Length: 491
Image 1 (cartoon, one colour):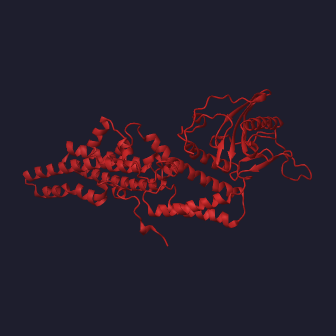
Image 2: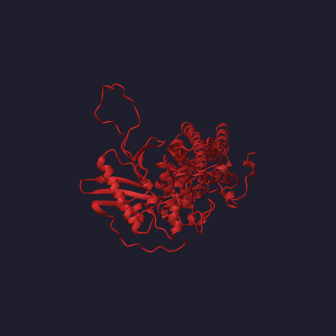
Image 3: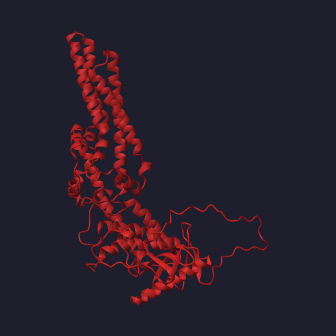
């Protein structure tokens, strides 16, 4: 299937009788962007006698189905049409059938058994003389949507592709989205259910035995999903809930597979694969390099860690949550350290009067406290609860040229200002101690000498050596990302 694609010539999607066709994807259906109905119809204040609430009749051809999430759709069983357009309106139903007739004729002219495929159709706009219809056909055997007209990838919202295999990888998530959106009438696919359960079992083992696992779910998440999936299978009853659940998880798996080039030449097999190229591709400007030097290159460990987590531009939220927990813990300790330094500086100012060094140290300590608490609040857990939250955030803060270094420098500000504050305060107290020794003030000299080492003691006790070396350094993980972690295996 690896063969080049010929460039298609533009084709007008205008059918007979004023029908205009637009190829779309299942993910382009405005499922979650529509207005919520507030009920603007005529209100009835009395229930007629002998009213029995049977199922609503929509003629002998159309069947009304609910989605597990509460949405509804209609299906024409004979023509295999699914639509969210209101076929209760006679003109809507007529336009849909007319458009379908044209698509069937067009498909037969291309030597396709088009009547065997399900088709999604939606009326975007209509008048007495014209109608615009969005559509796509579904191939259940090969699991992808297709169209009878030329479809430009930029119009569909897809990236350009090299071969048909790349195109299929991009379209398979769309197929599962279709099954999730329209699950009530779908045939039971036992083979795909068994395969998905096997995928999650392998993903569970892969996450427990590999630091660089590319599976989108952690081991515990796999176990939770397996309980759900196996529970559906154990019940033995096909349902729309069962179909939609399997389809949603299949969609998640196939999207990640598409990003990682699964079953394609040169796939990404490990999270750290291509990390050196990704890191070297980030070229900070002169100002950022100067800032990095002024920050004593303390931002480098954080830059390496964030780059590792964002390698391939795929978010594995379990790894990001661990890192954010480490950062929040560090920022709290830095806030405590900054407050302690601020108090020591304040005492020095009260006892000996303000000096430039003490004033600068106190100001930096206050900056450390403010920046640490601000970062802690802006990166709280509820702001980054899902992978989508994390992905949207990091795309918004990533520099197109300098990459992730500006973010790493920002994360290091509380640590850097606290270290400068401790150093300046240490120098100021040593100078005060020297002045006291010259004045033969033995008591004050002893107190100042003891206080001179207070910042170093605070740094050691509150933060520890590991924090100054970089929180969560994963350099040991880069040696062999496939080294088994047997201590995490459960019997």
